[in-house]
Length: 262
Image 1 (tube, rainbow, N blue to C red):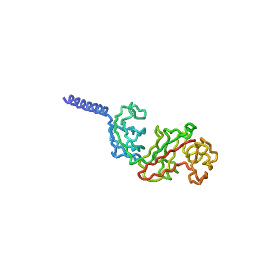
Image 2: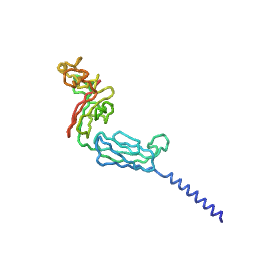
Image 3: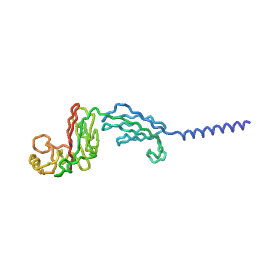
Image 4: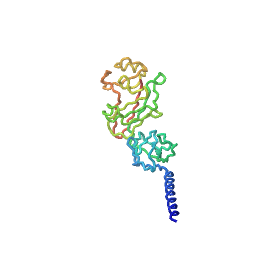
């Protein structure tokens, strides 16, 4: 009789262990996140809180072309709009080093609204190399890099505080700036807002335009026009800079065309 009870006891233990193993294999990841605030502003960090379960790897898609694999990321949206944020949560089941749909992760999406306090800077980027007698207005530049520096220190260090790209209309809009002076640089490939150390003001459209700029030697119709920064009608090292200075006043939209060339 004791033998029968002993065998039954062992059978129950083994059954419990197998049952536990089966339960563990059935545990599935649950993707979950919350957003710290409902009042999200362009140019300010938005904090995301990860509340996922049964997951150690994560992939975030912020809806503006940027992603992250951090567990608790924050993200800055450069422009106002409505964005769909998606989180994948799970394990690297196929051991390829990344979390993807091949790992059957859990997924969750939430929309987020990003609003401006006001529109501070509205830029249009133009291509100096597109000038011709029949195209004096210049072509807009799509996907130009617009770099904003909030101080002389960050400009000197070459570390932009905000970088965004011009849209299909050559526009780059920067929101939520406080009153003050900012430093800008714009580039795309070998095109830049400065040449030979001088800021580009535009293109000489006519011979009259050339004649009115006697301080710029070698000027010719269709050539690049430089900025005389100190206004002394002499183009020298005192006028050299790679940054465009923009002063923004309270509740004001600053509109400017920036010409880039090579």
